[in-house]
Image 1 (cartoon, rainbow, N blue to C red):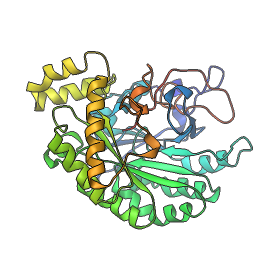
Image 2 (image 1 turned 90 degrees about the vertical axis):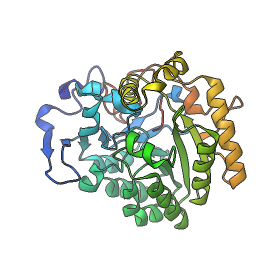
Image 3 (image 1 turned 30 degrees about the vertical axis):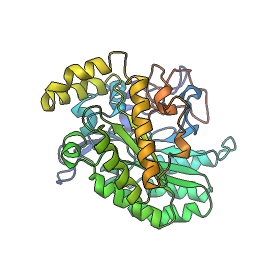
Image 4 (image 1 turned 135 degrees about the horizontal axis):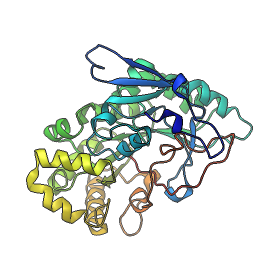
Length: 362
């Protein structure tokens, strides 16, 4: 693996060298078949490129790779930069930044830090299975709370409820919000396409619990899978369940298939729904994203159902006049911020090379 190639900029050394990497496996049912690469990162606050058009400028990603094993995950390509497989390797080779909490506390205390909003879970899930063993998030949340620093979390993981008291404490001194990712409620589809995640019902129960405890919780209805979860009846059932869970808002995002994810998803489609291959080829002939007309149709339908059930569109993911969301419209070649060859984005103690990237949510 190309650990030594992860330089922060052209003049700096590696973010971590091979001597700083410890590889572990655990022979327990929840972790069998997963390899963890423990590293000591040199930076943890990642600057989001201006071209992403997102409503936040900084992210924190304590993990790379994700045992949720979602076949559509856009972040698969990031494993290329470690010479790791973007298919099963992405699901089973997990990089753990074991010093993330202490590093974040130090960077938040920097005179250069202005207390800006920090988004988490925008690349891979910070509450994936590995978090149950490494428990990095309590330290991360504690560091943000102690600096009264605003933050948000996007997750599919029910493990976030472990940190409920920390979230409540932080919300007393700063703006705190959570979004659950729930693209559909079909149990058969969930087991096939998101095999390592808690069920949609479990995620919606998390939404209900967080909301009941004063934590504003939205749902990112992502991804909407063409020809699999996009019928009006399916969309309506999903929105109804989201509204019943007490979500503050719902925002749909249609599946996008960038390099790395496209190959893995297409292989899954060929095994499970071969009759849809030609339809997908036609729909995504223009690139990684479904056509604007399709995105507009899904967005319009979801908003109509949300109005019916009293659950509006998310303020943090504003819909454009043409019916697309900012994350769907910001289409630049590249990889998610902080997850390309530079590894950890723009550091507070040094420059960052320009790179065309887009932040796209799971």
